[in-house]
Length: 423
Image 1 (cartoon, rainbow, N blue to C red):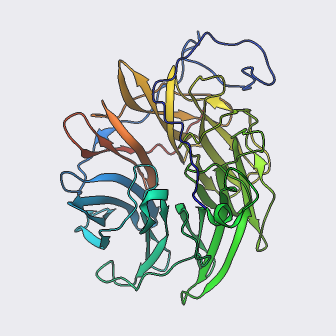
Image 2 (image 1 turned 30 degrees about the vertical axis):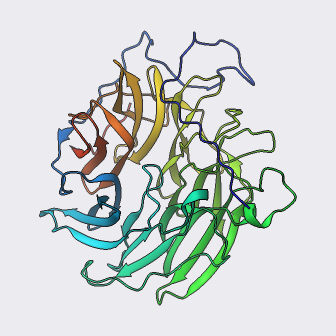
């Protein structure tokens, strides 16, 4: 059965006058604040400096992950019909030599669903990418490979899914598990196998795990009905892995929910906040997570009432309960968020905001108290396309994005991190 996916991809949302009511359709966002506050916000407190990236000219679709060794930047290079996944690692010695993971002429390539490279604590590198199975219906698969020699050679690709359907298997989030590796992804198998739903069934969220010998130990469904093309997120907490995703109710309410891997089973999905965004299409705008112990920070996008807004919230109990949302943007947001914990108890959150007729990357610090710093723009982020990425590695906060000001080019920024003091 052909997958039906509608994508709500409007970059220019009209912001109307601020609403005053609470409840459904109102602006009941607790401690959220706007750019019109009379009180002066705390200073950003970080200096974002330009960072030269090792990707060659013409590269696109950056992804950032981190480990105790440093940050890994991966990207896609395209020459004619061939796509290559490559990466470089940033340590105290600078960027490593670029290495190739895999390449192919049948990959499913999009700025929203980006391959990645992750280093595990034992030094193993793990990567994923997406070979196409039927381009006409946007059907593709996930492939995993690993390297034990710093990316010089890679294992034969393996698949985490075994349903055999020509449907979507993408939007992967990789994470380390005790004794192995895990991933969650959006999976369309139930769409093809469902013959009673006139819309073709539902996209689901699936999970798979592998042990240290790369024997698969699980392939299970996390949630039966999710948004078709919003990015997933996953982080390790001391209470288990937490995943965040955009849910899809039977009434087409598409808010952000979380589920936690607890003693081998995934908990029932729980809302981060009831935005009550009802929309008959996928907004292609997933959440971001960052964790330290049981503390979790989340960022997300919503456009309930056609007002594009980005928010952050905090949890002190591994995602069981959440604070009131904190507004990130100052005006018209198109989302594309990311978030990272900092040592002083704040989190750095990034999003894309439409200002001065351009899509601009902006960053601000937010605290669990609801305090916000001023928003700043990384140098050179004047015309951002796609989905910017951000990661924390040691004492550095690193950002990467695709800039379309003068052709396609990857750009980066870096900040040294504070270690004390929170308002």
